[in-house]
Image 1 (tube, rainbow, N blue to C red):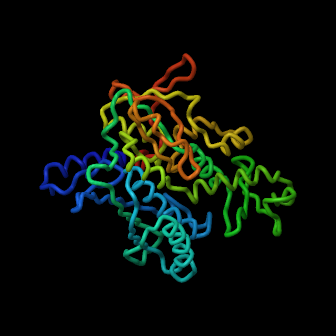
Image 2: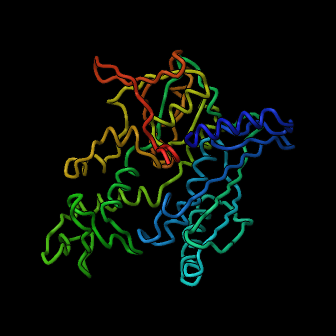
Image 3: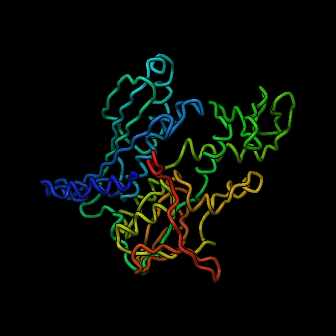
Length: 377
C-alpha cells in the first residue's frame, strides 16, 4: 500500500459516515471545499514537511524552507482556482534547533512570501521534537460559490495545459544530492562531477557574476564557468524556493477557464494520472510540447540527466496542470505574472489510459512520480 492507496481507503471510509451538507469536496482533491454564507465557498489545504524526507536543514538557510512551507500550500489553493487569505503553521523541532536562529530565519522567509500574496498568519502550534523537525502548513482561501476547480470535471475533448517549465525542481534535487548547497547569498558548495566525487566548496570571495569562480576539489583548484554556476543555482532554487502559481489559479478560477486542475507536486505523469482517474477519462500528450525548464536543458548534457524524463516524472515544480474546454482556449491569457501556459495534449474517452506521442510513435505513459511508502518496508 502506498500513500495514494491509503488515501483512497480513507476516502471510502468517510463516505460511510455522517457528512455535513456544507462539505462540497472532501478527501481526494488538492483542497477541501466548504460552503459559506454570502455566495462564497471556503477552500482549505494542509501539507506536512518532514526533515529527512521532504527537506534537509543543512542544504540551505531556514528562510528558504519557510518560503517553501507556505508555497506548497499556496499551490494547492491555486489548483482549486481560489484566492488565498490566511494560514496556520505548526512546527515541532529538537531543542538544539530551537536554540539557534532556525525559527527566526524560517519565519523571515515565510512572512516574505505571505506578504507578497496578502496572506495573514493567524495561528498554529509549536512543540519540541526529539530527532527531526516537522512542519505542518495550513492555508485557507475563498472562491465564488460553486466555482472551485476540481480534479474530477475534465471531459473528453478538453485541451491540456501546464504553466511554466517542468523538471527544474527534480534537477535541483539531483544537484543537492550530489553536494550543492545554498547559503544566504548564493551557492556555498557545488555538486560533485560524478557519483564517486565529493562536493566542491566555492572559494571564499568568489561570486557568480564576473569572472569564473575557483572551486576547491581536494587539493586541486578548478574553474567553473559563471553561466554554469548560474544554471546550477537556478535549479537548486527551483527545488528549495518554488513559486506557487497563485495568479494563474485566480484567473483560471474566476474567469471559469479551467474545466479541471491539479498542481504538479508529484510529477506530471503521476498528477495527470490523478486528474484522469478522478475524471474517469484518459489523455494523449505530445512530447515535443512538454515545456522543459530551460535551465534543465542547459545542464543535462553535462550531468547525464534526461530532460524529458525529469519533466515527465520529476516532482515539486508546483506548476498548474489544467484542462480547458475547446471553446475557451482562445480566452486563455498569454501570460499571467510573466508566466506562460503551454498546450501539451488532449483529454480522451479511454478511461485511465494516458499516452504520449513523439512523431508517429505513441506509447503508454506510466506514472513514475514520487510516492511515499512506494517501496517495500
